[in-house]
Image (cartoon, rainbow over the protein chains, first blue to last red):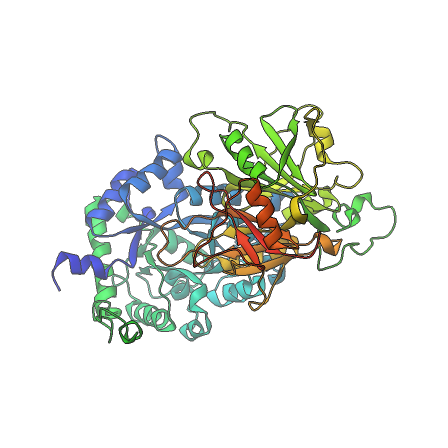
Length: 306
Length: 305
């Protein structure tokens, strides 16, 4: 498969993340587009740091034609009380407004690392439900992600427990392969998830076999992640993607690659690596370009019978 | 919800259970008014008059008119938006910009919904005007909470009566408030069902039970202190191939004991109704033509007067 159109078609479910690239927002968006991507995961810093302000940044994103995969990241929202909670509600509202202005319909919220936050799962669920309510008028879904160094919620299994307790239709899971690989959560638990409630899957790998302590995980996650296929956990990552796909997940995959080397490389070098990774996942892992039986019919059986 | 529960420091006696029942957490008691925003208030006024409404009062400080018939209040807001630039398209087409809910205690209701994820909207009262609390609703609209509707009304404070007109014109053919139709985005039914359930205690009505001639979507019933004041919310997702999938309050539904008689009376005032294969006047209900690019009224058979 070498035709450019086939390649673009194959990788359309994958996107890069602004955090992976250095430089001004417009240059990042151009590099992604040139590499064939049609969507971008946006981080608030990239917009707020725009020389003409975040609204100009939002206009650039719209002008680029790239679709927003999602918007990140709301941190340490849940489990607080009193004025801390009120403060976080104000932060969350501003993030929701930015998210809506960008036409993104997913806001990523990651689990709290704060020692000031309660460890009561029911209160965590209540706060996340409130966050989801705030997001409903804007049409935004909240993807809740368990950081592997989260204080209370540090595996997707606990995050899923909290999402179930909160029970709000626009609150679901954000899956990040890094945290699953780092905390060595058994992948069997993926089969218990409802694919309709996985709102985002972020993929990345890293280069050491293990990241045992929270400090190690944090340092690795923030400086030395690599694209899928470039790290040492390829087998587990393939297993993860295949399981999520088999579950029926039809949403986007985004490359959450924080890497100190990549942010000092020329952008096309990095975006081409991302493209190679996306193509590998689409073709060799998920076999996206292989037509499914009956997919090529012009009319369904029902309408031709009528 | 009792004030005591929200402000325990004010409680002199031990905490009391909430005095509203679980099914009506904020003490909802119907709709006080519906607000339209438009940059063409006179054109909208004409449509409202064909629908049997009369202008009865104007706002003290803004370009806002109150239209009324029976217990129905419609507020037409032509006050320019801050910034005052050229009105956007959505302002040229009149839109339902707010719905004001009657509640037992507005302050308590407001605190209740904010606690659960209602999104407060800043209000800008002028001197001697009421500060009416509001939260964000669908598509940029607002939901107000009003507790002064019994002995005296907000309209006595913020509005000046138009001289020489009857401040309480009777309703044509027993028209009364029945519900609001909300257009919602694709796959968003359960988000909105949850929103209204969580904040207002609405209940989903079985799909077999429908009113009027436009049965699409999901129907929610809002609780009321006086059962006669309950109202409906209808949530409708777009067709798969719809060009416009935006979310908004699309139309209001008015209940009437005899639809055919009401249609005759309104036709005499100049209102036109849709008569097509898809929708036509019958005893169950009727729907008016679309005026000014977006103003529609639906009539629904309903015995309440």
